[in-house]
View 1 (tube, rainbow, N blue to C red):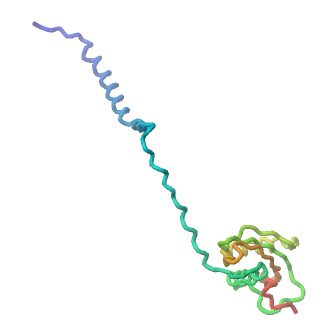
View 2: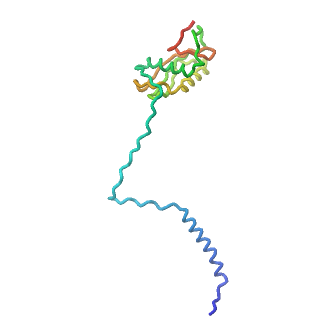
Length: 173
């Protein structure tokens, strides 16, 4: 017996095979099905508590019991970070700017806030330099006996850009 094949029978097979192969390939790329939900009476493991990473210890510490005592530690710290900008000797009678600044320090010695009690508003560039000097000097000595501290100091600014702090001043002529 001789079979007669249909002329389009073999050509119709190829597009279906290609489409089927593409569908199989795409199915392999899909995400896996979600995990089955646990049974209602299955034991559930308690959540694992993860401890926060330990806080680093402050490098420098202050044992000052009061903000007034801390002010000396902070002034010494600022001087050590600005050695080239400290005015040596007695200041002249007329200064370019005088500013009173209040600084908040947290338990790690970081500056959390700065407030002007008396701003040298005639010299905004001096205000910006003082704020920059304070922020860049962080971390300050950590106030371990107080936990955190707000201290106040007076900045005595010479026209040369050098300064003294009232806490450590050598006086005026």
